[in-house]
Length: 142
Ligand SMILES: [Zn+2]
Ligand SMILES: [Zn+2]
Ligand SMILES: [Zn+2]
Image 1 (cartoon, protein in one colour):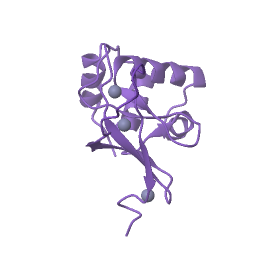
Image 2 (cartoon, helix red, strand yellow):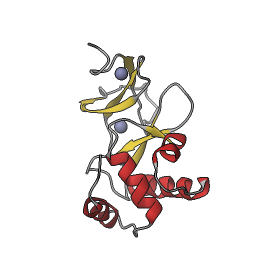
Image 3 (cartoon, helix red, strand yellow):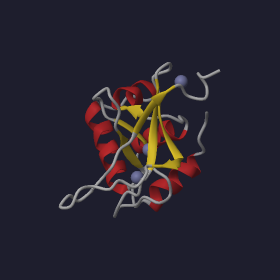
Image 4 (cartoon, protein in one colour):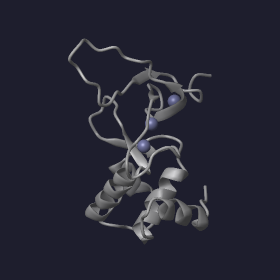
């Protein structure tokens, strides 16, 4: 899937990031995949070769600016997915669940399903909540 250069420019600009070739390639990769990606997935998918450190820095700046977020699953390797419009360089705003498919192994954001409100015992303060649902995705569950 080809992502227009203008769309990538717009996203970078609206998150106060300068355009670089690596940022363009990495962002294009996220935009053309509907599921979460690991560092290794991104390395494999981008056309030009950038060294690991450059890709790492690109992911870090996207995380800091609210373009992508970490998706926790049971594999221990960090995966990343695109944020919705609500995230910026001040804060990420995520209440959605993540779904991991046991057949294709892909993890994706389910933006339309929120994590239910969690009541913690007195004295505990919640900072972040992650909810991973495992099962079969709508492509595999046929
Ligand atoms: Zn976010
Ligand atoms: Zn699947
Ligand atoms: Zn997500």
